[in-house]
Length: 408
Ligand code: CTP
Image 1 (cartoon, rainbow, N blue to C red):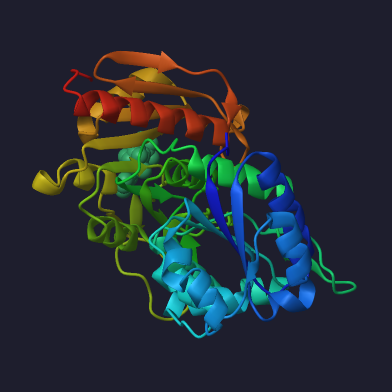
Image 2: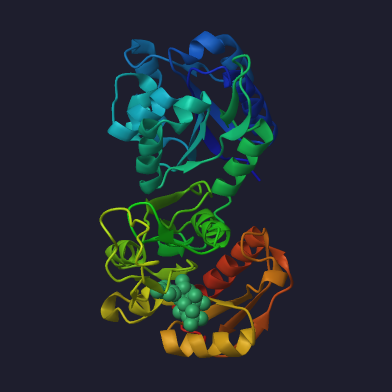
């Protein structure tokens, strides 16, 4: 499936560079043409000789080398390919990409390219978690750059472990194949996803919350991004890692979630999977509430804005497809169908969140998708399987609509 494809592989300076030689070999085995750029640090880890022996081409290294520029200019190098892969993508190279530095061949080519880019980050877990790296990653993601990994595991440094290991060659290969397969049914579309609980402050140290984990919403954001959509995920406080490929806006309260969601309009698709707190404390205390002899304080609640309802009624900015969730503990389908009409959304995904179902916080979900045409009950599946199936349904629906086929 890679036959005839041209990959430009940028090898930066990390110990994981040795694994990239295997990627080169496997790409060529599958019929791809591979051209490699080695950064100066990259050449400290793998030699130009091994890279060129495996790729069957010279290893490009120097921006100012007359022979390289005569051979093939850096602009052509940047464009003469179907995909640019950066592996290992070091913290340094990601930072350069984020700010647009072009002080060597690799960074110049990455700035000049108009091809899709896939990065396979690899670095020490502390470097990966550093807010600087995470901010750079968010910038790159928002520009449509895709990533594979990093994985969690042991580091080359003795005794170090955590997230930062470069993905294995087979995983990188699968990501390259997926990126080149053209299987991106939602490419060019914008999607908004809400996920997780909200926290509504009572005072500076206490809040009202719920049991939502954010797993389902985050999985939907990841699946939409995988299908090629430009995704803004608005996440309440959740332990879930930011999904690859999505721009993530972290919020605490329902009102912040609403502001972030409306700021992300216009969009083609909105999926409201967040378990938004229905009520907030009308006036949260600015200082910690103290126990007094007068007994416990009474909390006066105010109703929160409804994000799903607001997006469904956003006039000319209304997404073409608005999908809500209905968390119910009894008469699941009946209540969810009524909720679809009340909220004005196109589809509602009903799930049973009664304690016996184990849905809240668990990895599996049992859902019914309700639209104007009726109810579709899906078998119990993992939250990522539910996300993938939902995104396939979204893709099919929008495709049919764009062809003028009437759909619910
Ligand atoms: N929702 C929302 N904003 C709110 C409340 C809910 O966007 N303030 C969305 C949820 O993200 C979900 C849908 O509305 O997509 C239904 O949420 P659910 O909690 O099931 O329903 P509620 O509207 O809270 O109704 P009730 O608690 O009465 O069942």
